[in-house]
Image 1 (cartoon, rainbow, N blue to C red):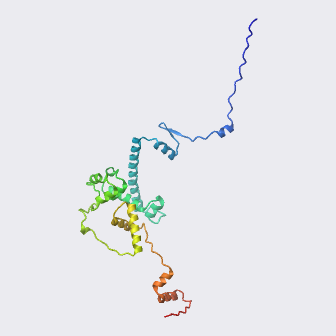
Image 2 (cartoon, helix red, strand yellow):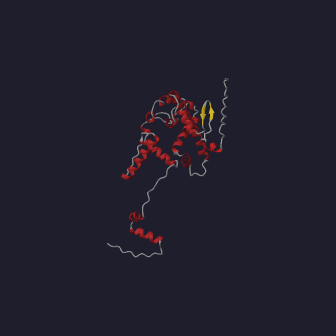
Image 3 (cartoon, rainbow, N blue to C red):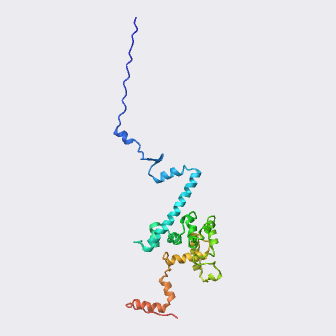
Length: 276
């Protein structure tokens, strides 16, 4: 008997599923990314920065910190120059003053802007290279700039670099700005004496303490000078407490009060009985 070969019927090929509109709708959305030097860039500055920074090595992190600080210092210097032009030309339309302009538009006090402006003016007017003072930080430089000269800048930078701001101020005590040779002596200082009521003293002490904290100084006289300078620059206004009518009348006296009342309200007749 001959063997009968049975041919296997090939299985029908299964066609791939057609892409449907529904499938396309359900596909998860993928944020468009761009490849930059082998790194995925999403265009979201927070996501991209976090992804970059969180994977830094120690060496890379320290190098990046140095780079950002250097760039920030240059920005402060340039911003000081821009503010000088804006202030001199009064290009702050819509604002009451330069102080009002920087406070409302940029969110910081005029004193900080004035520090940056002072740094810019002192370095440019004295032809001091910014590279010589770069790395000190603008807080130190704000105090140091007025006494710097092309001749002493290297010496002062070397002294200031390892010091805190408070230590630098202590070291600078007795120094005069350029053009005022010599150190301060007792003849260069004046003592002022004031007497305050208790509530007045509390206000004065609070203002001095606040100014010392904001300007990083430990000296009361420096803080008082800053407060006075801010007032002269128009960055603050004196708040005079308003007295109520009863207090004013008591201080004026009943006779004077009635006299004023009669002048202000001539159509009103008052019958006054004075009890002895």
